[in-house]
Amino acid sequence: MFLRSGAAVVVAFLITGLRAQTSASLSDCHNHGATRYCVLPNGEETAVPSSITEAPSVATAAAPATADAQTTAVTSCHMHQTAQFCIKGDGGEVMAVVTASAIGPSPPAQYTGCHSHGEELFCYGPDSEETLFAAEAAAAAVQTGASSEGQNEGSSPGGRNCHFHAGVEHCLEPGESEGGSAASATACNKIDRSYNMPIRIGTLFVMLITSSIAVFGPILLVRFAHVHPGGYIFTVLKQFGTGVIISTALVHLLTHAELMFANECLGELKYEATTTAIVVAGAFLTFLLQYSSLRLSDSRAKTVASKSGIQHAESMNGDASDKSSQAQVPTVGHDHRMPKLDDPLSVLILEMGIIFHSAIIGVTLVVAGDSFYKILVVVIIFHQMFEGLALGVRISHLSTISLLKKLLMGSGFALITPLGMAIGLGVLDSFNGNDKATIIAIGTLDAFSAGILLWTGFIQMWSFDWLYGDLRDAGAVQTGLGMFALVGGLVAMSVLGKWA
Image (cartoon, rainbow, N blue to C red; front, side):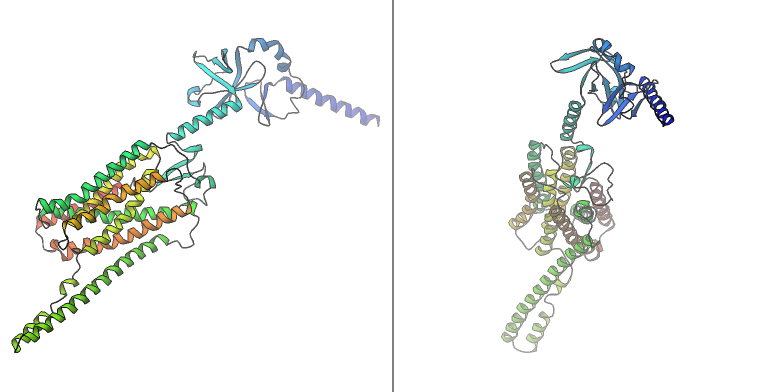
C-alpha cells in the first residue's frame, strides 16, 4: 500500500514537471474558435491541448510587465490560410484587414506605432503603410461586406463558380462539378444582383431599331428600289439567311435546350432523349401543318376548276369544245405539288420558329448579370440582325400578298425581342433561371423552335433553292456567290453560338 502511494506521488510529480516544462517552452497562446494555438521556440505555430497550457507560462507571467509596452504595437503576427492575426497588448487577438496579396509572401512579424481613430485600431507596418486591425468577428464582417460589393460588380457570389447557359445564370458551390450529381439548394436559388437599368432600357430600343432595319430592309428594297429577287444581291442574301437559319436551329436552339434539360437543378430526367424528342415533335407538326394545307389547297383548286370546266363544256358544242375542256382540267393544281417557299403559310411557319426563341432571347438577355450583359448585347444584336435579314428576304419574295401584309409580317419579328426584354424588366427582381418550371419552359420552347427551323431550313430553303429553284441551273458566278454566302451564314451564326 505504501509503495503504491509512493509511485502515484512520483507519477504526479513527473506529469506536473512535464506540463511546466512544456508550457514554459510555449508562448503567445491564443484561441481560434475552440482550438488552442501556441508558438513554439522556433517560431512555428501549433495546436495544443488546453490541459498543457493550464499552468502559468513564463510568457503569461511576464505579460503584465510588458503590457504597457505592447499597447503601441501588435506582435507575434502569424497567418491562418489567407488572413493575418496578431496579439495586442492585453493578450487579445486581432486580425489585419488587408488582402493576402497586399501582405505579400513574407508577412511582417509585428506592427508598431498603433493608434486609434474612434474605436478602430491602426498600426504601421515595416513599409510605414497604415493597416487597420479589428477583432476576428469584426474583420470577418468587413470581408463579407467586401465580398458582397464584389458580387454586385459581377464576381461569383460566396465563392461560387457562376456562368451562363443560354443567358441563364447557373452557379456551382466550391467543389461541385458541372456534370456532378444533384446541385445544392443554394446553387439553384435566385442570384440577387444589382442591375444597370438605364443601359437595359436603352438596349431595348437599340434592339427594336436593329431588328426593324434587318427585316424591313429587303422588303422595301424590292418594292422601291426594284431589285430583282433572282439577281446576285438577293441570291447572296437568301443563301446567307439559309445558313443562319440552319445554324440557329442546331448550334443555338438545340444546344441551349440540351443545356437546359441537363441542368442539375432540374434533377435527372428519366427519359434521356427528351430534348431531341421535342425537336422531332416540332419538325413533325410543321410538316403536318404544311402537308394538310397543301392537300386542302389542291382540293379546293380542283373543285373550282372542275366546276369551271363543266360550265365551259355546256356552253360549247362539238368535239373541239370537249377536247378544250379536257385539256384544262388535268393541268389544274400541278404547280402546288412542287416544293416552294413562295407562299404566305410557309413563311409564316418560318417566322413562328424564329419568334418563339426570339421572345426567350429578350427575357434572358435582360436578366443576365452586368458582367455578362455587354458582351451578350453585342452578340444578340448580330444574332437578330442575321435572322431578321433571313426572314425579310423570304417575305420580300411573296408575290401574292400586298406590301402592307408584308410589313405586318415583318413587324411580328421586329417587336418580339423588345417585347421579351420588356417582360424581362418586369420580372427582373423575381426571375430565377434555375427554377424547375423556368428550365422546362425555356428548354421546351428552344427544342420545339429548333424542330420548326430544321424542317423549314433543310426542306423549304436549302433543298428547294438548290435542287428545285433558281440555283439548280444557275451560272457559275451566281452558284459560287450562293455557295459562299451559304457557308458564310453557317459560320457566322456558329461563331456567335460561343456567347449566345
